[in-house]
Length: 272
Image 1 (cartoon, rainbow, N blue to C red):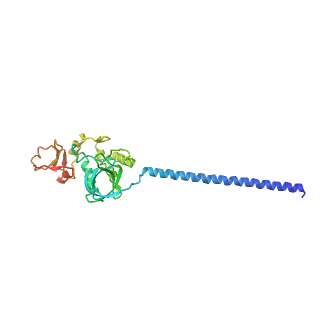
Image 2: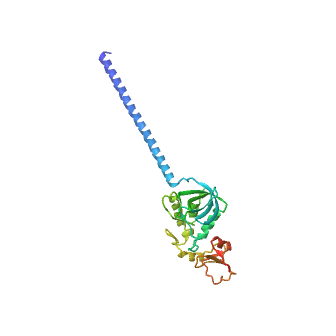
Image 3: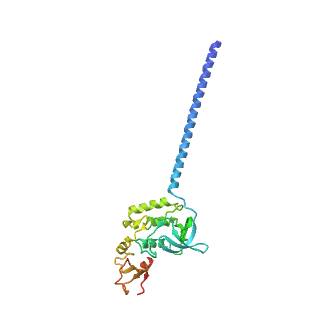
């Protein structure tokens, strides 16, 4: 082989080698880009999933344990702290119908809300308390979420149709979305307060519905309630039994099956 032929063969081999190296380099770069892109997409996907989970379920804040002294009504409870101090607590973001208001009649489903809360939190039982931001309302009551066996009492009252979402004031809006979703479900099912048309409103409970509903639906499980509940001009809630002096002339605003039902609803027995 002469010199020119050798040189020509060498150049061909060299060029072929360079071409292969360039091609291989390009393939590796493309592969790296695909891997990096895939990792970025996975990362974004995980972030989106985490963000979605965080927005749908708020984490429970710091809580402390307290003892139930007394359930005043569906949304107000008296507790004893570990240091012995007693506090009146208003459950955050909910409102139940009245049973012990000085100037309002017993409202439909108020006794049911009170009874449910008492059964859930009997005197002497323990409850977890998560206080809100700012902690107290204008009456000096603690503002809080209660937990019994890990379940939020505020939510349970809404699930049963015994409360409405109310008194929404920033910054105490931590669980607002979850509570509103629970309320929507109760409204759709027309249970509890949502079974009476136009009774529960954004401004409160319509008292004009109280007399109609309370007379139509007795408190208790009997078919023929005999105890009459009446609210006098001073706002005193008094119940009358059939043997009472004023029983026959009393116009009932609420009927009860037993004296205990009447007492649970905030009524006292007539003295005559």
